[in-house]
Length: 304
Image (cartoon, rainbow, N blue to C red; front, side, top):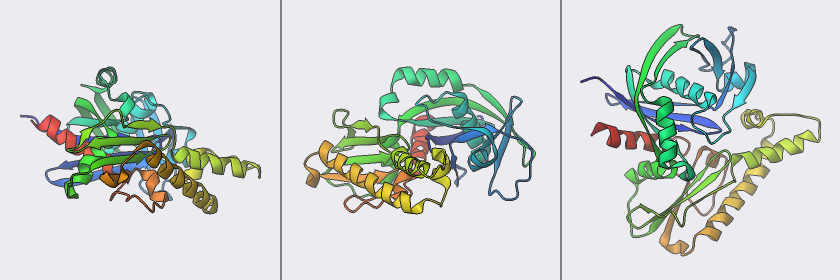
């Protein structure tokens, strides 16, 4: 029987998050969802730089792509099969994989959790063999994606969180704040997903960053959103923007869901790390929790 490694991947617009455990050893990766044409240079000023070659295409990933790459491209589309997403997934495989064969559980928002999306993703990735050259370590990996499935991101986050949460008779709401959107996922007693009470709103980190982008443009400063996100130059404006975003999310929760005394609401997502909620708790490891939950689902789905 061949050895196969299970991987959970949460490919967001802001960051890619990946998680795996193999032979009891956990491993994870986290880097910005930005790629760019790469070149050889002095990398000593960068922590854990990513420079890969796949099928003759040389590219930077993450903060290195943002700072040094030619024509940086941020992952902004819903589509999980674009060249940008494929390059990001290659980078995750290079970071995580110790086996020649992998099976991936890929997170998707509620609106993309459907058979047509799964079919498209399987056509792109299933049985694909990727030959990756790490241009910095001068190492090679050959990885075959034996299988890939999709799972709702909010469900995955909740599954991981519930491992250490004492269930009661309340319904549960999981609010996952992303780069462009926020998922409001509702679960009836027994953690049954309620589609009617769940929704996706165009509200997220992008709104906070665009406010800062507009403010600094009045001083003739032009920055891309991913540059503002990485910078510590605008912390005063970020405090204003994230305070406002927090208020907006809390208003949305109370507008969408009633009987809040019978509902346990949790906040997840990397953007939540910049926010300060007074009413609702932010889950532990909120940026990585979806990837970890996706790995749990992969373990259950593929190991049987």
